[in-house]
Length: 521
Ligand SMILES: [Zn+2]
Image (tube, helix red, strand yellow):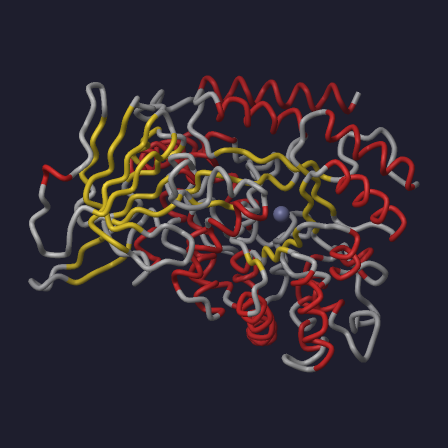
């Protein structure tokens, strides 16, 4: 019965999506040959920008990267790669070219949020995201279908890496190691790329991770409070988990004078304010930065080749609700259904603003500092940190939130080039796809972000709404916004995708006479 109901919803959504489809635009290409001319290249491996370079792509793959001159010196055209007939040239003079971004934590919309895949995908693609790891969504079949459509270029979408929520689709809750192993084998058989865990009892986690590791699939875990006292990040990493999401389970691994979080005695995990307010005091309960225990845990995680995917941005409203709530893109790009989902609620996940004020925000600011100190030092000691967004909750909008994540990695102490590497090559490595994507190298797929400004100087130029600048003539202008997102050798006009999203939002608003208002007004 439940299955039939889900099928009905999926079909209905599919039909609605098909009927509502705003724009049949599927990008341009791929071409037998494509040359990006005269670009400033940021290759994603931590190297500084270099240019002008010509990047040559043949049949979706990079075949040549040629430095063609010096700054301020006329380029000698005779020494440049030649355009073949049927080839496509893009003039990238003065523009920056980066590897396509990898969002390691991207839920493809949600039923409760009323965000369908077309809306979400276009927002991601408009912000340079060419690969997304879906950490459990509406079911594996649904995700695998989108993955296939994306691969065949039948829809505008990033490359989809499908992780299934542990136990998703199982008739009964998984309560024995044997059941866990069987579910993991089935998940692989069905074609999933990995598993997203939310924590479970130790014997279940051990069995599931062991089986999954044998099959060579990826794994991610949000160590939720209900199981974390017995199984934290360190247990997971030792058992073979490949990446942790957010930060839960890490302070718990760092406890040196307690074994459970200092829960107030009237705490209830079903109360979203309890959950998020108390989480904001958690890092202060962990071992102090650079203490013996802190060092020991960090070093062991690095030795285990464990990936941290912090998703800083999704917690930003906890330290500055006003900022997240009033972000300028909400007016044009946030769907009415999504806006309603964000409002204070006892039911919606992450809408914990029952009574959120100065005290909660200050606690969270301290929480962020300790958390960022760990993440930055983890990177400094050779640990892998990736960029993930987890949008669709807590006032964080798809695509925009990914760029905000880059800014927060910068705030944590990363050099802008380290930020770019986290958002590209590190993600590819964590997905074991660094032979194909993650940096601009010969032999890799043609996934690029092209922008008219220098993103290293200001990541805000990557926001769809651009960055604000005052001209010599005292005129206020907007600069930047990704110009082209190129995936698998197909060129997408990022601004056209954004215009399409705005149209979807305008239509949804007109239909219900919606006006975006702040909570309680
Ligand atoms: Zn998530």
